[in-house]
Length: 232
Ligand SMILES: [Mg+2]
Image (cartoon, rainbow, N blue to C red; front, side, top):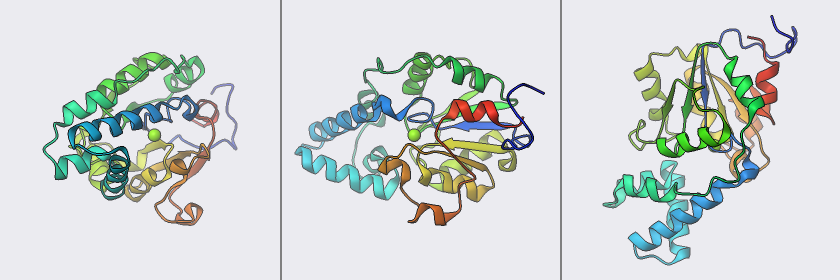
């Protein structure tokens, strides 16, 4: 028993596997890191595919819609080295990130296994965990390579991690800022927590209106605060 919870707090006593999206989930969306990544994706496409900026943006929208990520479209349709893409687009300035001791403390008290589940690459995740003071709190990182470049929200990405880790989805929870990425987790029987940040990308899909799709168990606005209040 601890000092933070009470009987009306959200009940997470059935959870033994804690799965966290990385970008805009383990750090605030206001850090705006993804703008840097998007800019570098545009530059990479312009350079490698000899595109104008507007063409690069249009191609990214197309691949994002069809595959869930730019890289998955590149792998499917071009002879692009995924490693070159990943290292280039994630080579960003992380100085906007700050250590988050409250979040670190909240995660440290979670019983069981903890994982990062990101459509980005492992090196980026490792750097972010270092900058936010969360290094050492995770049992593993599942990145875009772990998913064999079939990213969230493709159901295969979730099925693969469940199969490889042997986790029981009924005892797992996924925390995500993108509502669309919670739907396949819900379908597997996981508990879903949506970190809503008010942006268009956070609020998208899978079907409008999002509220009607029913795949979100908890909607929150601060991950650390929420983790401190749940029943364990
Ligand atoms: Mg995210």
